[in-house]
Length: 278
Image 1 (cartoon, rainbow, N blue to C red):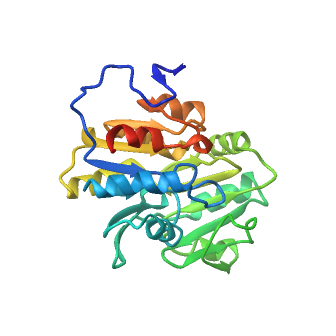
Image 2: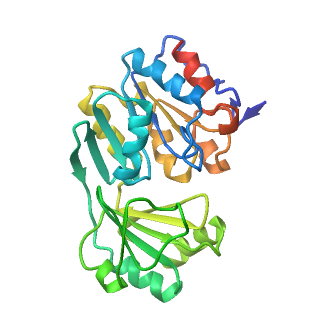
């Protein structure tokens, strides 16, 4: 079965050079290496370990904050290296922990627009390595780390790396419409699986940060293998030499990829990784 010129086993039907091998492998986290309850299947862990054993750098590129990413780095047993967090706004080297880069923006306009067009929306801003400042508690499990309740004036009082909007009563399609209605300018935004809108500094995404990490390692974009399943992975999948969408991904994500592999429950990235790493 093929999807947009690609088959569900992850094989590129476009005639890729058979001599190509990835020199860096980038992974989204949720829905790609762990399920949406944070559980990592053993076959995924083993497949990633094969990449590490081959001496190929593994980089996590995620919408998670760093304190939510570190546990996955530890679970995978990755060697010292960089992770891309907060949809590209934060780059962290670990271990030892060092915030290599943090790009911020003024959140006041976004917060004001949300309060005007969608009153009652839950709003959070990230505190790197600590947790979040937020106007009210999010549904259980949505956020991790320390939670500091503030009014919206305090939330907008200083530059931040990201703003998160959440409303459990809305769907992802509602939030796509909300993002369009807000007319957001000077920022980058990503709509998640649920009623979740992640807002980052303008021009910042996983691809922009991953390009920096790859360049530091002397790896070209065309030699990168990248996996993802969400709308915030689209730029990364397009940027990488081989972008692979997990089978559960929305159609627009699948169309952005060179290949579509198995659904997460059926192994996710395992089949594609086994193609390159025995």
